[in-house]
Image 1 (cartoon, rainbow, N blue to C red):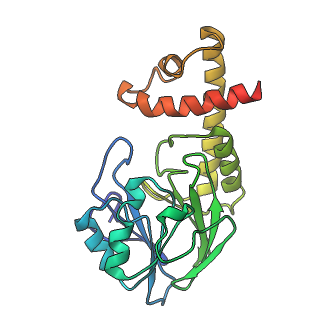
Image 2 (image 1 turned 120 degrees about the vertical axis):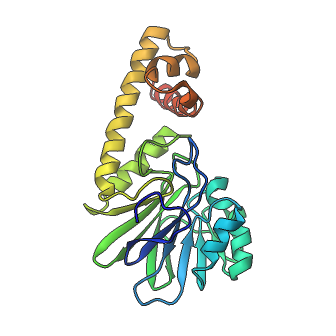
Length: 258
């Protein structure tokens, strides 16, 4: 079974399986990856990012019970909206970096270690896509696993709100063990997350250089849309809206430098 496989719990490692929500779009790629984590031999599991309040999908997620805990990588509804429904259905608490997303449990914080389903899951605060974005690291079967939410996708690049924060988050991910298995919020798993994080870092530096060049051409007061039309000229215009959000973050970063 390969990605995408809608409606099927697909094993990625002995400790991580994915149930892909059937909500494909420009922003969600093939759909939202709902991750089911459990140490080999554990009866209970942890569910990460239940997705939208899509009852058909959530019924399939609930069928993996007993669910000990629901974790969220960030607040966007394609990751978090279905959490209250699932929590009530399976009787599990919800934990997230953002307090108002939590149900029956405290928020998670940077450097916390969450023990559940036979795993020790370390919380890494990795803002940049959103302020509340976290990555979740655990070791199983001799390999480091890292759930990245939308900080690093299975393919393509993510939309940013704060480039300075994002570059620091990538630096943190680049420092993880070589060959770490990346389990993203969208797209296929990544065989070497650290290598992908380095590629993301290089891509961001390349984009910054392109924005600098565009500003020299357009002038320092250029609007984000003017910059998009130059830097993203080779990208489908239907994606210019999300690209503009990233350009805003890049312009804020460059102007704060100057």
